Image (cartoon, rainbow, N blue to C red):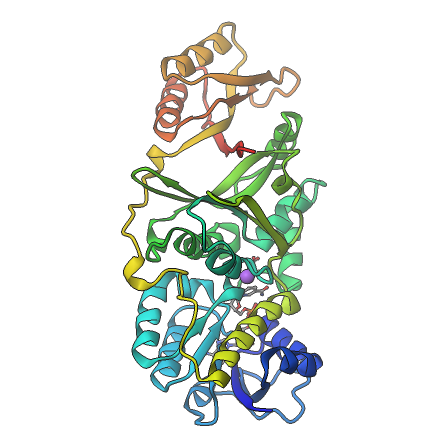
Length: 434
Ligand SMILES: NC(=O)C1=CN([C@@H]2O[C@H](COP(=O)(O)OP(=O)(O)OC[C@H]3O[C@@H](n4cnc5c(N)ncnc54)[C@H](O)[C@@H]3O)[C@@H](O)[C@H]2O)C=CC1
Ligand SMILES: N[C@@H](CC=O)C(=O)O
Ligand code: NA
């Protein structure tokens, strides 16, 4: 049987999982790929103690892997952007195919990397970069190729979803984050998870694959989960909603929405019930309707599953000597569109508002009148008389769907009232069509 030689750079969580699964399932993978995947070299800062490397040659210099003439496919699992970009471009220039789990690298430098790969006749595969083990890019680029995709929405950060899920049972944010780090779910810099940057990287890749637009991470609206409190989680629940951190991309007539933020989702919706490190991506296509892809979004072997699926894909084409591949973003480069990313003020959502108002007669009427002046209808309102804090009473409001611009103006007017001494808390809400 033909052999395809691979070199693995980075032996941390995902690198370790990849070595383990490649060794454990070697026969099965060879049967599927039609060739043997041989790890010809592995490199990382330190020789890992917890990974059984056996006879695999080890180096502490990742650049040795891209210079190794034996190697056909370089697997980049070091993370980060600077060295990873240098490594991947060097691999491509040396005529090597690349498999990477690095969403930051693809979202920020993907356009440049794909051009370099096309010039050198090699491929770059990145299924594991989005939603870990879930084959969602394959589903969008291949399985849904017939569809005009209208919108997609997903829980695409395992760490953030793990934190929000555990907070529902009253656990503290910092303690749960430390646990997610210990389980290998979090990024090297966990602020990427907490501030929504990791989800924005993944949403950028999903949106480009769904709509056929160039990668444009810098235009994504990004808001994380750091300000979500147990108080809002429990009040959202009493309104029949759960707070999830979602990435949403929607095609509008004049552009696309590209946004990542905490969102109230009706509790009965499937996506509200995706908990822990699990991810889910809901995709609406004009022919198929809605499909949802669900599974582990992070973790060593779950992510290795997608890394190895890419290795099998690339190895099959190397073994067959074929250059026919699914295009990176699922569209031929000349079919990509320059659709504008819409400013957030043009986006429509319903809103959960938490307003702390002084306990004076007529305050509720003033709030209702300001919302009405801005054309905002109220779906439900709760005044928590028993929860007086600093002389204020929380008023929780759920609005109907409005333009972001309307809510911004209404909140500015509310915050200008002497009766409302604190900032208004707002969280967007989505009602997915059936
Ligand atoms: N942990 C997860 O569940 C998932 C991670 N990813 C992505 O996979 C990539 C790797 O993530 P993890 O395995 O979690 O990270 P990690 O921090 O556990 O592993 C990275 C490894 O690369 C090594 N390394 C980094 N820079 C190096 C350099 N310049 N020279 C030599 N060695 C170097 C580190 O020493 C470490 O062993 C990242 O891009 C991450 O975003 C993607 C999906 C899931
Ligand atoms: N830190 C990421 C890892 C997978 O992409 C996450 O928590 O989802
Ligand atoms: Na994936």
